[in-house]
Image 1 (tube, helix red, strand yellow):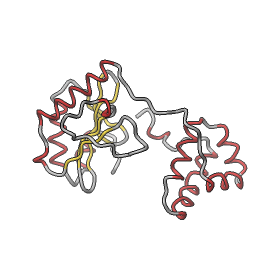
Image 2 (cartoon, rainbow, N blue to C red):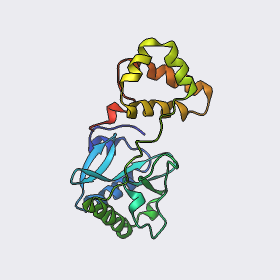
Image 3 (cartoon, rainbow, N blue to C red):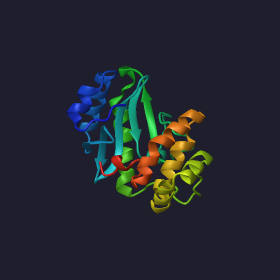
Image 4 (tube, helix red, strand yellow):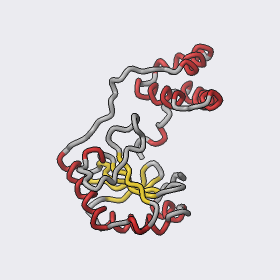
Length: 198
């Protein structure tokens, strides 16, 4: 998915499912939510807290609720797209405009807003042990400045790098990811720093 800086760029840059996203946007803009761009996609917030986003992919478009796991999903519409990785985020995937049901969408958005108002939140587990994949451990052992820099960055940033390498299925992909991140580690940059504060 492309990353955009403004709402107009986002709408203009979507090729597949553009009309459907415009319909979703109109529904979300009819609520009390504030519209913004985060991580290159449309995001809707309440009191500065992320509530729901919209996006389009190759085979579907849809909504994602940042605290979707707390929504009473009576219609079984929400899925965990990152099983084992995401605890709170839930997606509502659609493949045609016929699936856009404004009344149902607004009821889910209302529930999501209420979750924010109530202060309910599923926080990421930051206490799980850091497991550095052997490929990354070996690369850091051979690259002194990267090893020193890695030891100085936060545990969260270390985890992002470790997860990024270990999530690759093929050895070649792991190696190419390591080659990509070593210069970033040396500079003390986190893998996802460019998406923070956006």
